[in-house]
Amino acid sequence: MGAKRRTKKPSRTKSTGKAWAGRFTAKADPRAEAYAASLDLDIRLLPYDLVASQAHVEMLGRRKIISRAEAKKIQDSLKRIMREWERNKISPRPGDEDVHMLVERRLSELIGPVAGKMHTARSRNDQVVTDLKLYLQDECRTLIDGLRAVQRSLVKQAERHVGWLMPGYTHLQTAQPVWLSHWLLAHLKAFQRDEARFEQLLTGALDELPLGAAALAGTSHPIDRRATACLLGFSRISENSLDTVGDRDFCLEFLAALALCGVHFSRLAEELVLFSSHEFGFLTCDQGFATGSSIMPQKRNPDIAELIRGRSGRLFGNLMALLTVLKGLPLAYNRDLQEDKAAVFEAADTVVHTLIVLPPLLDTLQFHRERLEQACQLGFPTATEAADHLARQGVPFREAHAAVGRAVTWAAGQKKGLEEITLEKWRYFHPAFKPGVLADVKLSQAVTSKKSWGSTAPNQVRAALGRERKRLFPGKRVNK
Image 1: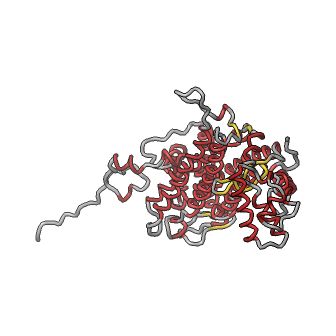
Image 2: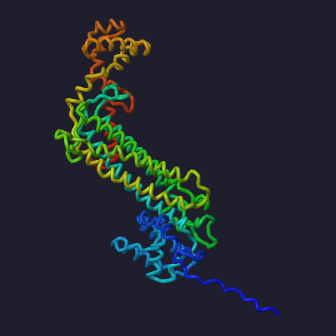
Image 3: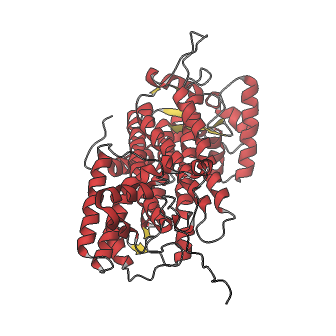
């Protein structure tokens, strides 16, 4: 007989210390670990991870996937970890590659191997999407509160300046006179739309539970996803596990809503910068929201408004960054998706900080009535009223437009305003002019004559203020 054949025993190598280490026989290169680590970012998801884990464990216990005693032991320890978080007693350690592993590691320290049962019937793939949605729900509510604060500041300023005239512009050229209150409420409407977008997110994409999709294919355990949804306050559950773990549309919707906030911040800030210049002189920013120059003693720069305008670029960049990450990813989960949080967190922080500084900046603006009225005398802002006067006499509007254009050219050459043109001269440009044109081209009449809903007419602006006051100050009267 030949030599006895020797069989090699299975290797029993040491664990690498990772939750996923069973397949590996060597430790990760520390440079790779450092590059892949996300804990410095996703640590802010820790309270949401704890809340989601408690609901998941509660469901596992109810379904007898784990014992009720085990579920209670895990839940009590998760509550303890939450208290440690609230007291700033949580300390990440080497090997905590993300927030989920930090929680599991700390839970194991408290209750031993039973901690591992918490992860039954779930994956970090569906876990992180759930955490992120819970986080974004809170962020949306914070943003809604902040946007309402901005709108309240705009309403208060509009109330203080009822009846004040200012030039309205198109192409940054004098167009028609409007009430200053109308201009303030115009910016308010943009922020109201922003508010509505976050409300829609709360009842839309953020109201669908991802937990239960597991890694990508669901789970063989008899879980009850609707019970988990009820425990966490979601009204719906996702319907396709592959889509669920690869979906970041809700992040894009959130970033798009933030980017639109940035557009509206920037447009308002641009006008504050422009209108506070000596060339316009319409308003002055409070000293608390301005800075001086290190070399020019006379300067009073609207730096906060400029920073608000500038930081909108971050919001656009974060949206584009995540769009680029997602555009070529195959289903389902890919590590590229770790980049979602960097974009979302940075953009959310930018807008939240802006919403803290913008209301007091608006509250302390000082408007200059005399300068606003002087500017209304320039650029023939009531020319449209003269054309409309002719149109009311039955003259085709294009013919009326041409006649008033000739009158404006003549007045500009004579350095006169339209209010200085005599009736005789008006009739030189078109015989259909009536004596009423002399009143129609006055600034106050140009505003008062408007009849359309949503216009700058005094009754329309007052009605709009009443609606916004009722919406933003329920049960209260705005101080004028």
